Image 1 (tube, rainbow, N blue to C red):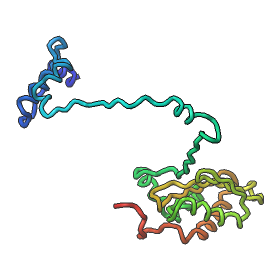
Image 2 (cartoon, rainbow, N blue to C red):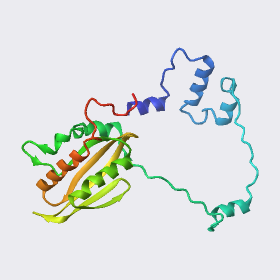
Image 3 (tube, rainbow, N blue to C red):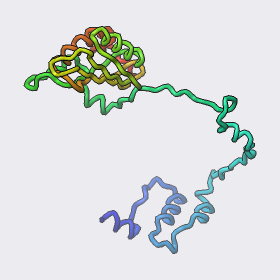
Image 4 (cartoon, one colour):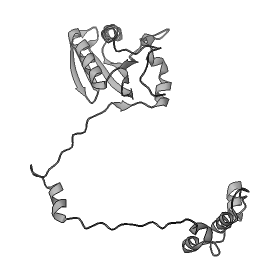
Length: 220
């Protein structure tokens, strides 16, 4: 409310380093009276505003050939152009990375007093498509069917456990082109069996798991 009253009254202070011409223009722009307030045409004629001012020049382009435009959108083998866009992992910003700092520790799957967790995350080195391949190679020998799409994977154990078939979902997030965060979570089945699966998976991925003290590939 105080700020509103100052605006209505036109009460403000200009810094002493402002030139007289700039100060005069600001005073006229901030005039609370719309009748006496400077207009846009008057601003364009102001001496301080015109100093070293170069009006924008818009170049007129030749009219597009309608035949060319039609050819771009024509649905034919000759004219139709398809651009293949390579999918990328979901990027992870600094705030998300800091909030999940504990997830960089492979030992965080087990928490005191809470027993086994249903999900965990860890950092891994290498390109995202290579990490997908490594997860696939590590999971298939353990009896898992795999479905994958856009760096997300669904794993289902073909052999039923204590609480049915264990189902696991994984997703890769990009921290940098050479460093990724891998999320592994149980979606169905026994948590203890999930813990055993994760231990085997992490052992198989030991060569790409990022460990504290190693170069992360992040620019400084």
